[in-house]
Length: 92
Image 1 (cartoon, one colour):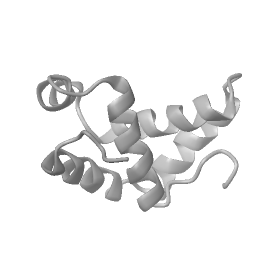
Image 2: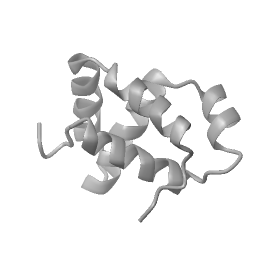
Image 3: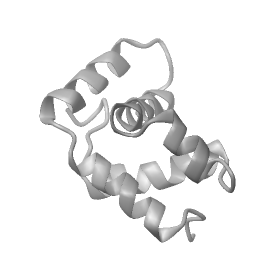
Image 4: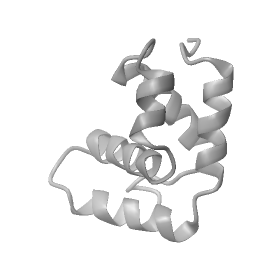
């Protein structure tokens, strides 16, 4: 299934995820573990928390919101998290 995100926006997001520190990732995973939600929602929390650490809401509104839904954005984040080996609550 092809992603709907533009290539340049995908590259930007992936670059931002590449710059995350191990500490930032551990913090997001730790917080997700404490949530009383499903594992799927914990994984989504991790992706969203890490996105917020590196990408401003203004950038998202200006560049992604005009053509992507939350589901499309999360699909791109899932792929990036997998490519960058961002752990889930089960893998750390």
